Each structure stands twice: as C-alpha cells, then as structure tokens.
Image 1 (cartoon, helix red, strand yellow):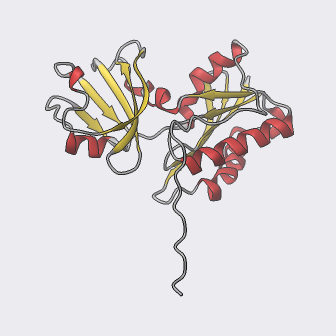
Image 2 (cartoon, one colour):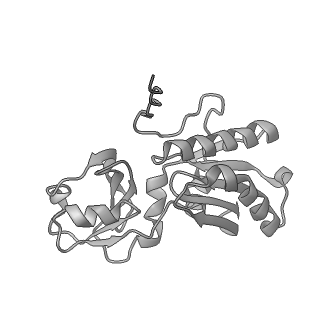
Length: 226
C-alpha cells in the first residue's frame, strides 16, 4: 500500500511517501519559525514527484497526531483531513513521541525518553523501554524540576528531542545522555502506520482531533491607550 505521511507537531515540517514498509521519498526541514503553513503542501508535491506517484495512487494518509505545537498540529490535521475527504482515503494517526524512539531501540539504553519542548520549563514526554519499545510511562505535559525522572536513576537513560537541552540543564541524572537534535519525522511513521493499515485501524475523519494534550492558551491583544 502507498501512504502519504505528514508530521507537523514540531519545528520539523516533514512529509514522506511509503510503499509498504519501504520509504520512497522524504521532504523535511527544521525551522525556528514553524513553517508548516508555508511548506507543507509544497513538500507533499515534491515527495509525490520524488516517489513518481500522483495523489490518485495513494491508499491512505498517516499523520503524526502529537503532542506538540498547537498550530503545527492544526495545520497537519487540516491537511490530512483535506486529502482524506478529497480522495476518499482512510486516515491513520500515530503518537508523534512514540515514533521518535525508533532509531535508538536496541542501541544499549535501558530507557528512552522522547520529549518535545513546550512553554517555559515544560516538555511533552513519555518513557519507553530501550529494547522492546514498550511504553513505561504515559504521555504527559511535565514541568521540569531537579528531581524529575529520578525513578530512572541507575538506568542507562537517553533523552531525545528538542526538550532534551533544557532537561540536561535542570535534571540531576549524571549518567544520562541527551540528544536534542532529534525531531518527529514522517519517515518514522511508516512502520506503525503500515501495521495500522493492515489491521484496518483508521480514524473517523469527521471527528478526528490531534493529541493536543493541553488546551491552547492564547494571549489577548492589549487595548490601545486612550
């Protein structure tokens, strides 16, 4: 099956095309300014061109459902729904954090903790077994403190994602390793999306909402001075 994969939950705007478990083409860019609204549909065009496919060749759309950037998730979900409605395709949704651990499984770590930077001292994170990939702690919005993650002291721990840098500065786990250069990527959606397609585990396109984890809190514009 040929699947279009969209991942917009972080600063990495990422699009991939797969055929079964094979990656055909990947287009992605990490930007400080969250360029999903500008780049996503261009990347879809480029990925299809690179895979030598057209939209009518697709069998499904897979989306990294979050958690992550509220605006990025809304853009990704709106685009995914648009493709599904317009092409009459099923929608597959995958936890963005769970896909980040894939390149690091079986590399010698007891525990892998993917995290996406949130506001101030907060991160979106989950904890996974470093060998099996089993989730050990549910996805949460966590405020970082020196005592955070102490239950994993004594284990070989790897923190990954753009929340890892501030975690390194705050959390007291001397033996832990940190890799802040890892972002959710459409290429990491392929394995789970393929499994879900084969099991016919699809979302209800009409009612699907991204995994925001937290409500959006905007700021009100200041009233002009009289």
